[in-house]
Image (tube, rainbow, N blue to C red):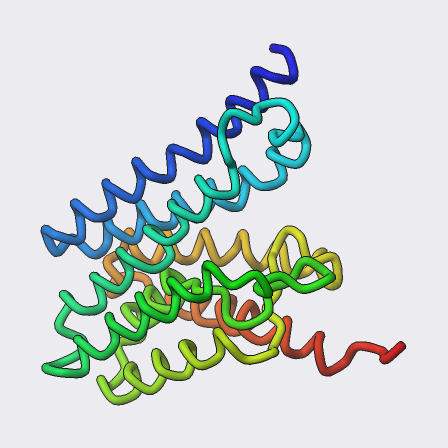
Length: 230
């Protein structure tokens, strides 16, 4: 297989995320939250793999007929934002106006963030919470906090999207990558395990999901405030 074919195959791999998004949406419409999250976790794994492959095979040069960045953003908005927001609204975890408020703030703020040209930092981290609502909402499903806690958490993350705070990219942020990448892979495993058990049969998975999510949420901010000033 030549380099151009390999580069094209990377685009095709990225595009499978749209299929997983549709499968997740169909599960969500039928209230099958466990399977919805399983499909979203698979899409999350694909999203983590296709980036390094795209750089390895230089898709911009070897398969320039497709815009990999645009393709990735479209799928990310579906799997990171749109479907998780729908799940939060339809699940009944937020009552009355709070559900409407949550889906409006999640979808609107995320649309602006995804178009923000300042979203990446010099060390390939994210500036501001990177709209990973799939990760946040699976934790909400696993822990089922009070609806006011959920509303406060959602509002806080929406604000954090536009603050000058750093959030790690598990693959591209070099600092602490030896720790961050295994924890990110562990998050994928715990998330799939928790979802497969419908968040009730596997408390160990729920604990692991919460622990790894906490690290991924705060690692970049911790790095930011412990960096040596040049």
